[in-house]
Image (tube, rainbow, N blue to C red; front, side, top):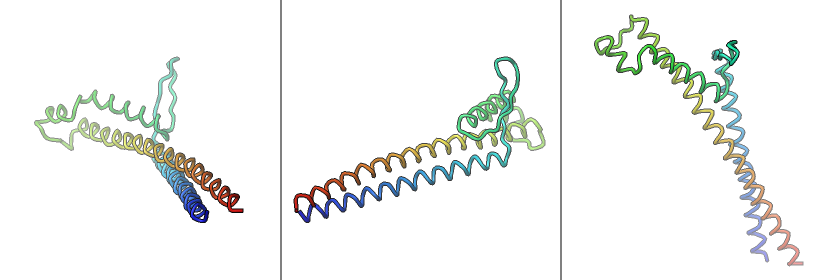
Length: 159
């Protein structure tokens, strides 16, 4: 019975470790989410949306969905200058011309678009991290609960 009790204690410790590590995952996910939202708010990244009744609304971009919409809108606008970067270069003899305002606008649009797509990726990774952390917490509780029951059963049978 002592062996079962030691096994139960090991299982309880593993359950507690799962809960702690899961909590770290959730905490880190929340911290990184807040960091990205804060940085986007500092930069005042906004998106103008035209509603069905032709009214416009400007919103702050600070979540995955809005960042995706903003990046897609910038990509569409950028492609009106040139469909691809190769097409842009073809317009200026195969070399980027930093004195051409059209090419500068294209390059700036690419930078902002990449910034927003990176934010979309980061928000997605944050969600995965937090979901994994939540799963670890639930699993830790289940494993710890089984360990606790096993420990109680071993003490009952001993008595």
